Image 1 (cartoon, rainbow, N blue to C red):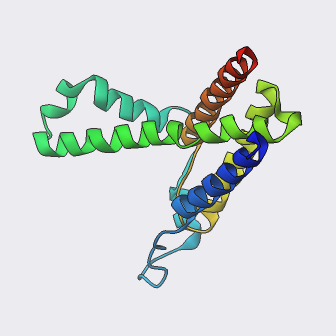
Image 2 (cartoon, helix red, strand yellow; image 1 turned 90 degrees about the vertical axis):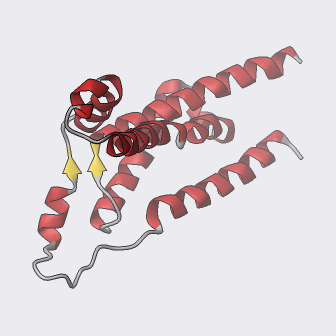
Length: 165
């Protein structure tokens, strides 16, 4: 199977998996007393960079600040959530940065790949927000784009090893 074909099928499988991961979840109870679509949207938008990420990093790097008032099991659970959020937001988008330049000649430069992935991620964030399936968090956009930059770097490294063969 040619490399481009394999990359295409991997990209399709990755895209389907990501769509399921990002969009197949339970909606909030729209019939709950006091539910307001407008308030839900307003409370699910985080536009100040590094607020979420900074909180997670503070939790992980300064346990003494939290263990003074949190019980150890709650702190451990919060740390798992922080690691899952930070790591997941980066790792889940590494394949996008790796596969896009392999499939699309116009995305051979880092700039073009990052612009494309940032646009895709921005669309996902907006869709999650307005379909009530998640938050719009600028930190997610930053971490996801970082993940795609790592994927692009891996693509470049893989290209160099293919040339040496």
